[in-house]
Image (cartoon, rainbow, N blue to C red):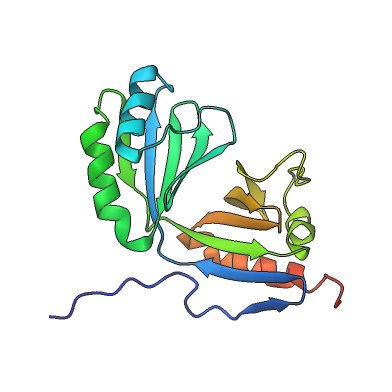
Length: 191
């Protein structure tokens, strides 16, 4: 019997093309959720041991550890993102390091996908359906925020000043968000 192959929710989505915006899916990334009651010193220490760097404890910030990104979601709650094939090892390392009395650790890789928007048109498109202030002084490089975009829950992460944004969205809402983004891009000037 053949092994089932993972297939991203946007594998057959039509491309979004515009001179001031590149939109791509970052398919099948590892995503591990860590959820504790609070960011206790013991929990932060356990995560630091497993990840090699402390998780962010300042609201809406991001930390990096090699090819992994740790996004702050709330006090004692983070999402750790890594390369696609790292989910089993990352989950195992976190479960071994984090006592269950401190936090739950779960693989949510096949619950969320990531859409990456890059270019000068990205903030303009996002502003059409997101209530957050996306100016760099409000959501700068290395920051993240949970919000709505086109009536869909997303986790926005501003990766750099290009600007590049990663949008983590539920797999079941990815096609809807992709269609919404396609329509929003049509409103950008053709330059």
